[in-house]
Length: 360
Ligand code: NAD
Ligand code: TYD
Image (cartoon, rainbow, N blue to C red; front, side, top):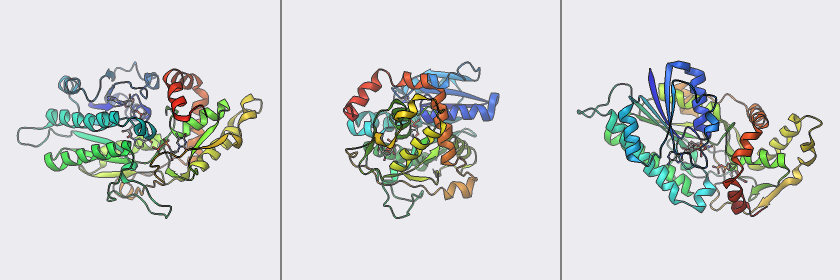
């Protein structure tokens, strides 16, 4: 039975990936989820699978070399899928150091421990061992509104401390591939949305605020463009790259779904009104009047857009979920999980929100 070591599996994409993998492989795989449970990590995301005999959760920090080494020495790990990271651009602007620590040093520790566990004395590797580093399209910088795309060959030009730290971690993985022939792949994906996303990111923040009748903060002119991908499509792409990709290669994963932030907000408002029952009191306050233009994000990237040509040609992956369907599924999930939202927005989130938006 193949054993996966998933880092950051209690976060948004990691938990969706773990659910996807158990739906796909059932009892044919074992997953060990290593997560330090920062503000973004939530074991509630995994409560349906927590009791599985082929699932183990270990609370550990990926920068803790000894803890990670111990996991590799006590388990025969076949696959590493490395999600754990600090992931929010706004937080990276306020507090960059933890991004360097987790994203760069943490990736170095993961690479080093995997190499130690897998490398043979002649410099080759134990059979069928693979490391997948989950990264972002933000490493490529910002595009103009001119129909151009990010390709795997696009030079790195990160602007935020978040994207700079992810770019650094990607370069470390590339260095391991070139120097040690380390069996790894990198995926650079566009913006994800879906269940379990923490409401500091645009889509869940807008859904939550609209339902509460709170203002909807729009940075700058609201015309920045992101290329949104439903999270299950990303999970599927990661699995396909790991199983079918050429080792050492990078694959871009994207939704072919470019939208301006202001368009996203309009679609969310319309979809909420379409989905809420006629007698739901919240309908009264859901309107475009909630949209509030606020100060722009520092160094705000204008546009991201992925050309997922390579992954389609080599592996056959394509985005499957249309945005209009994905956003309905996402909103339906938030309707059904009001307690989840209440729990994650209590406590520290209130302080974050106050500091970020000054009560707007
Ligand atoms: P997230 O912030 O929701 O989750 C991150 C998880 O990592 C959390 O569970 C957190 O507790 C854990 N973690 C953080 N620091 C850790 C540490 N030092 N040790 C162990 N665990 C730690 O992030 P996400 O949105 O799920 O993103 C996951 C990965 O995907 C990240 O590497 C991110 O760069 C990448 N990515 C995200 C997106 C997106 O749209 N969210 C798009 C492309 C790529
Ligand atoms: P975000 O979800 O933080 O993802 P990223 O910055 O990694 O792309 O933001 C998506 C876009 O939405 C980005 O252009 C910033 C913008 N945004 C707002 O306009 N208002 C908000 O409150 C947030 C959180 C984001």
